[in-house]
Length: 230
Image 1 (tube, rainbow, N blue to C red):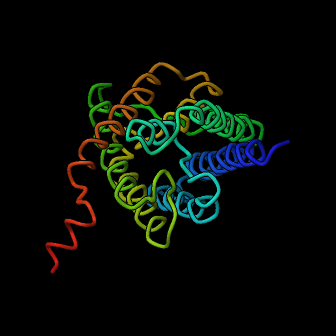
Image 2 (image 1 turned 90 degrees about the vertical axis):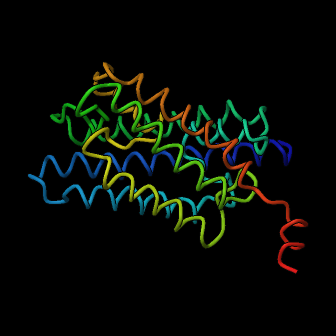
């Protein structure tokens, strides 16, 4: 095995592990909250999502960039920060990790009917718009604090995990605050509740891609920035 192949496998494995951890802990918190009569609470669920994203960025950011999200990988590619040849392996690894997490949660909690699936509290259109805007904000922050296609550095984990926590806290009761096609698709497939999954496959991707030109507009080249500071 060549060094290039080894690195590619390491990156894919990191994405699988990271997305598994995200879905297992995040949707696991939703399931356990239901099973325990609300002990964790909505705030606790939001904190769980934010903390696991932050932890995985610090643990895996230097390996794969810790995308953990097909919408993020696609947006990095659109932004020219991520090679097309790596995109299929990242998307497959993220989906595999999410499916493994939902499958394990189904084994652990066989009587739970939703397994943390994201479902609109109101209309599908309302959730579509919410998910689009939420993912736009999340991706804009990711693009602004990441280095290339890697979510690394001391502030990246705090900023990105904080946005996930914030958005899950205020928008979770309305749309589920998924911002992640893999996080929504896996529990939907395993639980069989796929009636609204299209919302969570399309809106996050569109929102993430819309953030790319906005981030480009906000980007100031270093040489110009230095001139304005002189």
